[in-house]
Image (cartoon, rainbow, N blue to C red; front, side, top):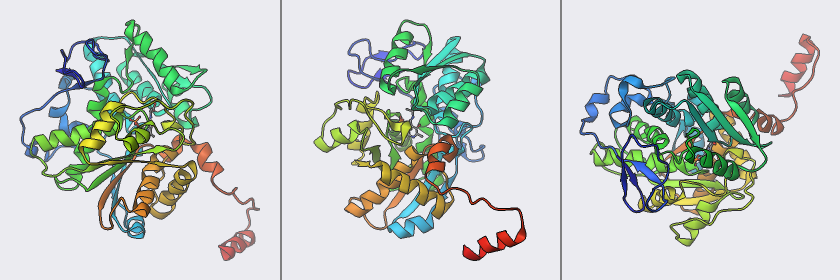
Length: 398
Ligand code: F0G
């Protein structure tokens, strides 16, 4: 069943619906299979390992083997910060971001419903993922991108997988409003995270973390927050496994935003349940350059229910953390993803995070998504002649 998170109105899983007809609030899919966790044991490590918890028809699954991403213990960085640190590397998904988990379920649902056109607004990754999964399913795809604010790798993916790419004169929030209006007229099936089936896929990040840890929860999960779907999805996944008695404890959900795009943190600081949208959001982390997150209500609930936290980081802190993770652990992530690491550093410094805490930082997208920002953050390659003497001189100076 699909249920309104505010007034509890219920809808059929077969209905194409994005917001509650009674009160206009956002929706969630409810599913609670009665299974033992032993059934997961010998299954291949993709998100479909947990297929009983996915609200789609198994025979119709559209997959490119998403999920089952690396869960890396980061001793060097963790020791420096005085915490036990794991990093969940979502850049290892087929199109290089966590969005693939949501798209696998969302596109499977689109096929079940028999739609022929799918669409989204995006800061980049959602469009790259949707374009790829629509191609795999043979569906038409249209994506709306804020002009000049989408990192190059993401744009290349959306174009190359054959989506109709529209460059919108406006920001993400405006593009989302436009494409949502089109979806409500029935012109396309909307696959932004306001579509509750998207979050059903993304909740598998929560499943994998507790599975990776041997069926227990870390003290805290830290992740970037933009449109606020992912933090909501992961909390939903963890709660489902908790309700199924697969785990006994729960993590504190900790959402990090950029200073220039932080409506969730603003609300958290006031103890509010609702956000005040940020006009003209701005940050180097273009993936989370969002002022009016559609899943704000769910995200704030996740933070409050889990006794979690929300903090902001500056662009400089984001870029420093991106480099730190790349150079101390060999893990290359795009700027938005690094905000989880930047947030961790800040919360350790402020004392919000205790020494010795077990932390999972989710890094949401691959370094190569945004090659320009990476290159701009480095010194130029040294130009030399191809002879041994010049090479030796450089090695001597290293
Ligand atoms: N990290 C990356 C790399 C993202 O692309 C996004 C969102 C987020 C974090 C934030 O996740 O929206 O669930 O809170 N990107 C969307 C997009 C908005 O269009 O690709 P969220």
